[in-house]
Amino acid sequence: MRVLIVEDDTALAEVLRAGLAEHRMEASVAPTLGAGRERALLGTWDVIVLDVMLPGGSGFDLCTELRRRAIGTPILMLTARDTVDDRVRGLDAGADDYLTKPFAFRELLARVRALVRREPALAPETVRVADLEVDLAARTVRRAGRPIALTAKEFALLEVFARHVDQLLDRAAITAHVWDENHDPFTNVLEVLVRRLRRKIDDDFEPKLIHTLRGAGYRFGASAE
Image (cartoon, rainbow, N blue to C red; front, side, top):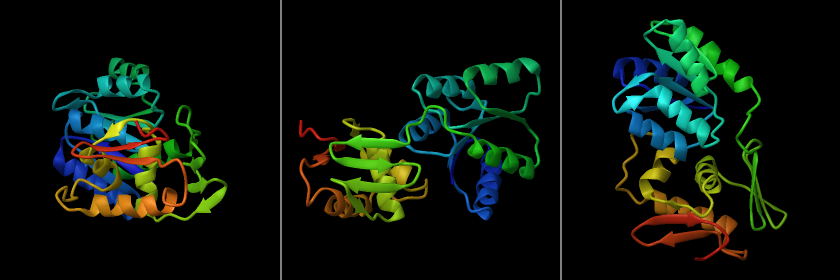
């Protein structure tokens, strides 16, 4: 399970990240509204834990934007203010649940688990590009009817490609999804991963789907243009 924590209180964010990790959940922290927006839009998450008050703007506004973009990831809003107006505003913005600070970690954990059990309302489960079929729920891949086995990192890379067909993705956007915030962006590990994925889903097939735009990033799609 992958959880995005958008929270500027570094101590609280680390407690949440470590606590979720103990329950076999992969958590990534975004400390600002801008970082949260980028990771929420370009990554794939099972739950987003979103603080209301953030450097750069309001969590309410980010929640509204994500819903406007048809991103159906369950959102748990966090706030220090326990008022009816705030709860209503959060739910009206598209949040699925609401938790007031301070809170017990076990309550947050229970709410995260409850949100994951809900059926996704907006996110597509299967993406098809040319003769490639990516089942995001079952985490299976087929091309021309042939099953293709991928590692966890290869699937994470393919997933971000599949969710952004025919869009330019730069290195930062991709690494924010495939790796956590501690990843060194100056290594060539992304290029190595792209080569491995190409060998599995492109080398023996036409049309080619992974396109390198030198100096800009990558684009995923059947068209070479």
